[in-house]
Image (cartoon, rainbow, N blue to C red; front, side, top):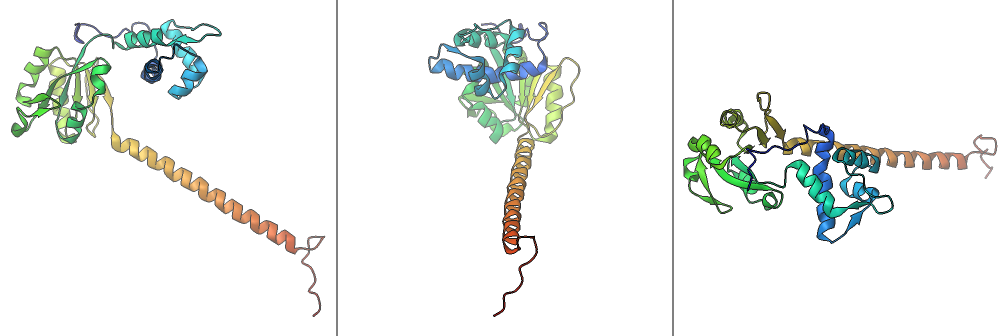
Length: 254
């Protein structure tokens, strides 16, 4: 089985825009769901809706892959699954090392989606001596003193950092020095890396803050709509109390 250290995805050499690359996993997830339901073909409109993009953008993205579909038929689901998987480099084995086996690191180690998507958790590493040798997801945790050797022995090119923020940069520096060229960072901090090293940051607190913003905005819109309804009702009531010329009616004698 080929490893990630000897093969790299062809997306950059083929000039595929980063925005398109970022959407390919969304298409792949939607296509995989269709494949599991034995759906043979899908239209651009159906696939775009499932992936959460517009159909024009989808067709543009697929044009970079050299896939244009068939008019009146759509796209062949199985072929697109293979084509996108190949473009993303998922048709080969990618050994991954996870550093920091606290609650988050352990949850990542137990995630069953890695293997089905071309990623193999090759090692789990932690700085706590008490963790050494303990199995997590069936894999014994190894001490961080052996990080460089572990990376070399397993041919790892993707590192996952799930350490506290204060330890993340030092771990990152060691990963890069050991030959890691791609890092997925779950630590709540910004990492500094040299040119040629790719970092993807996953910050759960930022995502929650963005959701809080949207919730606040929706609540404000609902409140504004409610206030508008009350004001409209009040205006209708005032209008009903006025005379035909808009004046207040005279008080009728008792």
